[in-house]
Length: 105
Image 1: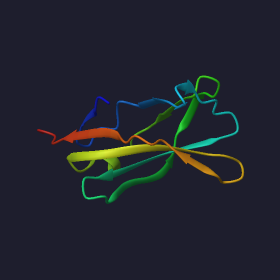
Image 2: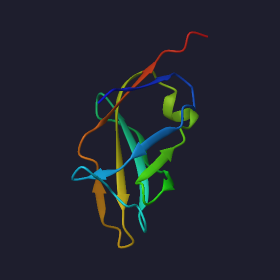
Image 3: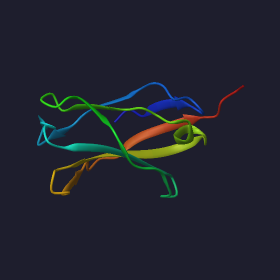
Image 4: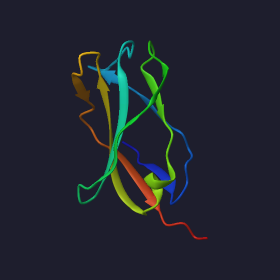
């Protein structure tokens, strides 16, 4: 997977995801979607923060970066979890590679 590239302290771009299961779009109707991100040492940087479902039928959602999410440059791994109304969780198996480069000024 191609890494998402972000500049330190930026809150854009809006991170856009399409959730799939068994190579088919996963219908997000009735699910809550959350985003998490850890650094290369396994320390959580973002812990289960809510995503916005753009189209439940198309399995699309977005995550709006916060300034604290990108205040440290480095290599990170993200993941998306979907949570049903019973609180049961399914998390994407593959990590989402994220690179935050140091801001020049």
